[in-house]
Length: 155
Image: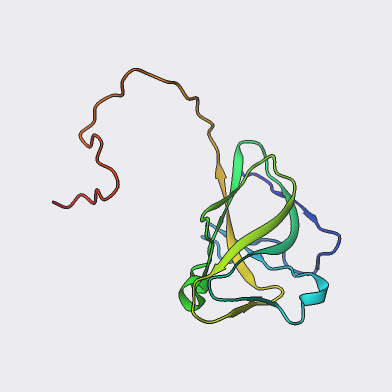
């Protein structure tokens, strides 16, 4: 089943910007753009080194039940400018109806200006399974056992 993500423009948003879109046929993520408020569109949104900010996209979404949207960084922004997401992947739940913002952080030593219309992140649509949780007296054995953090498989 191919889900349809319903999109509502915010009243203030620039609706001439493209909706989230897959840039190539094999793309897993749809690029989403910064949709800046009118008063800062010309100058852009400056992001200082180590600064975190929520960048508006100008949209709200309705995600079908049983799916989520994962917000992921764009590799080019991360490599070239140190712009990434501090909570990657971010999750948008199917029952959220508020404004869609992208939390970015600048890990570079230089400031970076996000321009109106810039592609700032990717949206990946994924199925969700909700599990049950139960307290038990013991857990089943495995070859790995309690090996966890730092377990690289190297001896």
